[in-house]
Length: 111
Image (cartoon, rainbow, N blue to C red; front, side, top):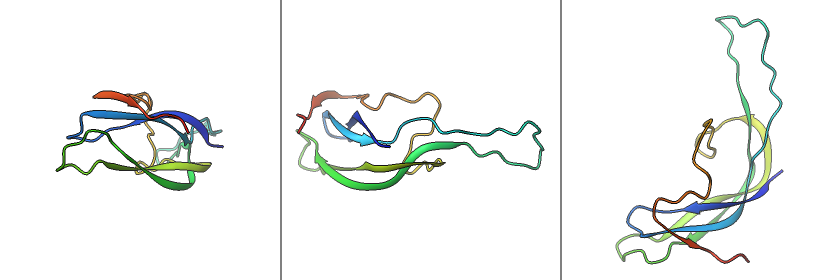
């Protein structure tokens, strides 16, 4: 089930990082690891990832005129335990927090 999380978006060329609330998929999935591991078998780790999404667009503040200030991001509508898809999910063991910013933070007011 999707959870509310504070996330950040930023873009090269724009001086500010925008921080706001959205729905993401997060959690644990049951995994069975075989007792006997054959060199010919493959074990796949299932993770909590997006099943249904919609896309929303935000505008980064104070971008120079030659940089497109718009960023589109996925909003989780439903989640599923399945194989990790690196196109839509962060499947690393120790990644950065979802609200990490490299540039100056600007909080988007909650609606």
